Image (cartoon, rainbow, N blue to C red; front, side, top):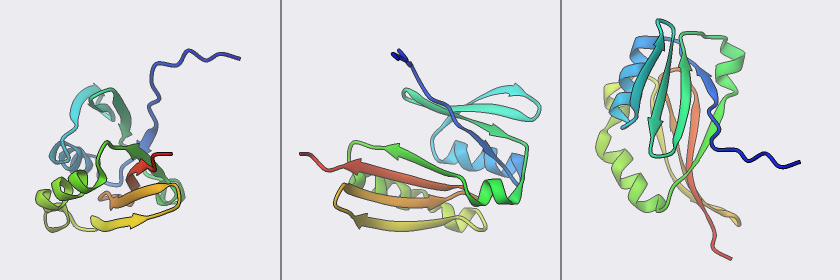
Length: 122
């Protein structure tokens, strides 16, 4: 089956919707408010839906992988944002190297785990 897909947009939850909205603005995403309880956040050709919905087991097990062109450059930009000082619970985890490539991690204010990585060139 051919999908002819154009994009994929996961739905993620927020423990504190307004706090998460500010966090994602600071992270550099553009917000499109869809409803009082849901926004679309975009950057370049990617996006995700942030919902004013919190189910601890769901949020605690949500991970999003974003492929970036240069992990070192992206890491430097993340560090410069100083998000962990601005937002309680936000953690930035340094770059790790794997057989498949490299990645760093960012936990958002609700606990969503973001992976920012690049695949090894073969």
